[in-house]
Image (tube, rainbow, N blue to C red):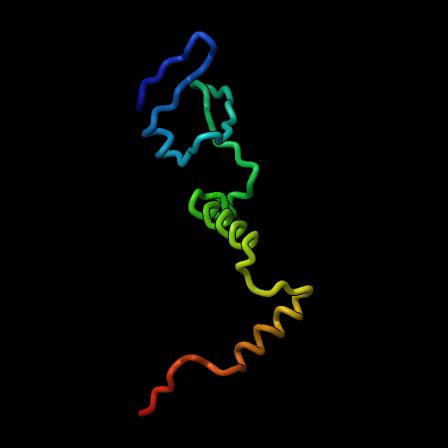
Length: 104
C-alpha cells in the first residue's frame, strides 16, 4: 500500500512504483469509479486488450522506423492484391536458395 495526497485542485499523484506495477504510461487515461469501500481507478483502453502488444513503446518505435524507411524509399514491392502477394511468395520459395546443401 502506498500513501498519496489529494491536492486542492483535486489531483492525485500515482507514485512511480504503482504506475510501473500497473503498466501505466504518461498520457494513459483512467476510469474512476466509486465502489463500496473507496474509489477504483482502472486503465481505460480504447484498444482491444488482445492487441496490447501493438501499443507497447517498443512496437510503436518499430512502427515509426517503418514510416521513416518508407519515406526514404527503403521497402519492398507493394502488391495490389493478396493473390499477387502470395504468387510472389511462392515464386521466392520455388527460386534458388542461398542455403548451402549439406551432403552425407
